[in-house]
Image 1 (cartoon, chains in turn green, orange):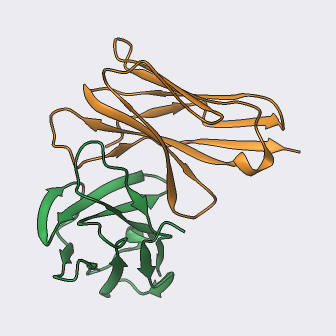
Image 2 (image 1 turned 45 degrees about the horizontal axis):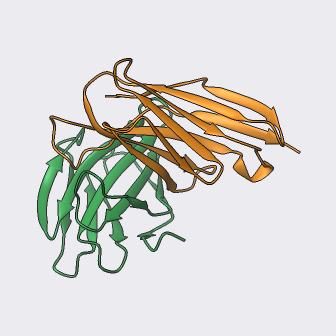
Amino acid sequence: DSGVTQTPKHLITATGQRVTLRCSPRSGDLSVYWYQQSLDQGLQFLIHYYNGEERAKGNILERFSAQQFPDLHSELNLSSLELGDSALYFCASSVEGGADDEQFFGPGTRLTVL
Amino acid sequence: SQQGEEDPQALSIQEGENATMNCSYKTSINNLQWYRQNSGRGLVHLILIRSNEREKHSGRLRVTLDTSKKSSSLLITASRAADTASYFCATRDSFSGYSTLTFGKGTMLLVSP
């Protein structure tokens, strides 16, 4: 158990819908990262937040947005869902966000878009 | 985009044998990390090697890094059935900011009893 929690574990929804994925980092970690894992794209970095502020953006679509709240939990919002958005979405956390930081991954949310 | 490319894509061995996985990458890096993922679950950090290091050990794991060839290898010695998992290399490159980890597509390791 990494100490990172993600809810829900599974999500099944229809195209065009909007969903929110939630992540609680390990106690004391200030950085939260979101990743998408799919069969064709592999594991892709989406976005990084540090202490409430966006730090870096990766391959995140404009239909996706994220935020980190004052209590450091984070939410990833996916809207206008498409079939291709079906994937495992992981959240990870680290103490600061520096180059040598180990990232601790949550168990993931499996999103299925029908 | 993928930075690391693991080789082989899949590896099947017997318990007690050694498993070697390789990773190649494209840009200059700050460090390279190896992660393990059990089927459909979260990734677990295994080891980090900095760009100025050549070799690192952790228990039954040995990682090497050759920055001139932009490649790394992960050796698991005396493998066990519990080592069955996918293994990913991930790089932090030197220029795009410290927070970005770029993962390869992974090597699936099957260790049979």
